[in-house]
Length: 348
Image 1 (cartoon, one colour):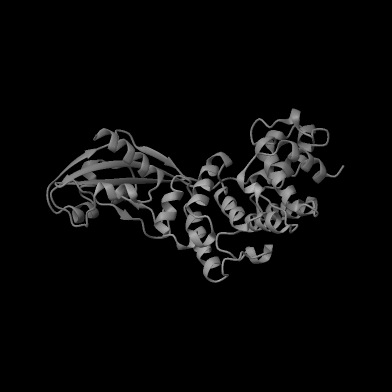
Image 2 (cartoon, helix red, strand yellow; image 1 turned 180 degrees about the vertical axis):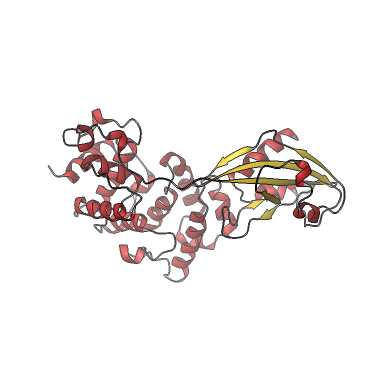
């Protein structure tokens, strides 16, 4: 029996009941695929339901403000996905009159849509035989065929894409793609795969050669960068604060935060008040206190943020202030959201 037949038979008996699998609407499929990039289904599902309720059509998403889109996205991480989602919704709504491109090559031209997402939409919505290759697929194929080429190398990316394309069921490509993704997510898992339940156990190279824990192969990761954040939580004499949009192309663009002093190393309050930003913000006397006794370590893919929240009580500040009620309405990183919850609870 062919690889794809065994896989699809397994899938039809074991597939997860997910809302985006009950439609061929490219809008819903696109939404789900963007949300599930580097995100587990359990985490992404509530966001999918929230977005489809708030934005039933691509026109609704296009007409929303970016700030509102980011607020609904809050907690899902990798916020560039949300900004690209909004940009593409506006492009499809305005330039394509609400019609999604109908093939892999055209889908690939959309902002935020790469090879994997274009393949998923093309196969599921339009029955195009475009094989998906994501972390789950890399794992299944490398283990089953015993491929030792690094999956994050230029050679490996090309090799696995070619292999995946040779295996796809051309008669039901969408079902096949969803089958191999589900198989990797629920059975051929990164750790403790369920080899005893696997329909490929009698022909899997890595199982036969005891290579399960060694595949797939990845080239050495980039060195993790350490950054030191000092947030200035302003409390004015009339109980207002300062909350500003994060600019630039770095992390959390478009989200809101307290004024930030970033330092090369961890600093104390004495060092903080000598920084140019602190002196510029607070021309009058202040009372400074550290909210968290230990640095909060927030881990991102290639950087770790060592964070202190400094409560600064002042009677004068060179910055526009805002109410705490307004702060609650703005989209923020999880790091800020958790602080706000703790700070609110402490000051009830």
